[in-house]
Amino acid sequence: MARTTRQHPIWDGIALRRTRAAADPDSDPRPVALPATWDEGAAAALASLAPGDGPVALPALAAAWIGRLLAKGLETRQLDPVRAPALEVALHGLLAQRRGAPGAATWRGEARAEPRFVLNLPAFLDEAGGFDSAAYARAVGTAVEALDILCGGKAARLRVGFADLAGLLAGLGLAYDSAEARSVATCLSALTRGAAECASARIADRLGAREPAALLWPAPPADCAVPGLAAAARRALDLAGASHGLRHQGCFALTLPDAAEALLGAETGGLAPAQGATRFAHDVDGRVAERPTRAALRAGAEAARLLAPVAEAARAAMEAAVAPYLHAASPAPLARPQPARPLPPPRAAAARTQLWRVVVGGQRVTLQAAESAEGSLTSIALSVAGQRGPAEIMLQAVNIGLARGVPLSDYVSAFAYAQGSMAGGAVGPVEGDGDILCATSVLDWAFRRLALTYLGPAEARALWPDPRLEDCTVESAGAPNDRGPMLPLPLPQQPSPAARRRSFRLVG
Image (cartoon, rainbow, N blue to C red):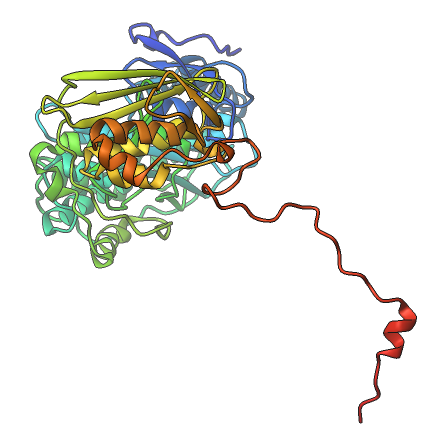
């Protein structure tokens, strides 16, 4: 059964958008195409998951690894040809709904790496605020079947796990450090294990059992905050226990996240608590902005409470609730979560803007300042003709600080008389600004210009006067009037070997 990388029909009704994304800041951006509603984090993840450095479209990339999986299953006779189309639809459907995907190694075709499959828990929340237990159990079964094929039917243990438990709990209105949240996590883990072992038993019925059915496990809670979840967990465990044998020693294991979680939109790995209610992300113009997390958007007005920082004991208690159902120990957290930040207040639209266009040291510079209705500075945009560099990136952080109430004078003190490429590079006379005659850099001019406009000419000229012309040259270094010695320096004269021997004295 030959496979191609043509787009599967399941993607036909999904609008795609094209953008450019890089796997990391040091990589060159590549063209990517992904669903229009998916964010830039997913675009970067897609760029990371695709081998090579050329253009990549999510539907075609998914068709590639799914095609390899189906072809391998048919070749090894692990996959019934009648079952193949349904498995293909199930795998494309999990990805299109951002519910599940294999780990990065499968996307990249790394045959020697141990495969894994992750399910994004918040994606199974339904419109009524509940959890779709039936769809989740089916997804677990699909993951087990896919991993068994990827391992060539030889692996005794598979690695099916979930991600973003913290995001799911926030969507359900439950605080991570609560008994109700631990009961939900316990039922969810019991359902995962039961559904995984049921899938392993189905494979064993067709290809032969290698392990006895598991009969001993802690009883899950009789009830929890999610309607139907506890009953679904008990039913899955009972079905697994009644089977004639299993194909695998274990299937349920939480693993460290990779780009697959980012592609699905999972914000935390495994059972880790949330790192806060906000995150830093690039907007459509490439500027850094602080935005609510997906978990915060789901939690609404309760985000600050539900996503508040938790003690290490809370994570340990959550792990203790989940551990009895895992087939492998949960990985240790890579780092302690950072304290949650309060959601920033919505920023009012600028009442008006001011624009300056000047030439600094031969470079055309444009500075735009947005003001509130009261006339106070709210944000800054700076551009240098033909450049996009560190100076603009610094201003993105400045805008976040201004939104949080950092005084403009603090930034003027930090950036006035700044020099070097990190400060914008250009240095020399200023043309087009009658108040500032020369500048040591683009940032120097920009922040002294802002000081004159928003802090008052008297204060600005007293605290930050024009530097001397000799300080506004390419050869100048450091702050104005602060020049160090210039190399080369004369080296000290070295004595001859004979002179050094004569200087030795016998001690003893």
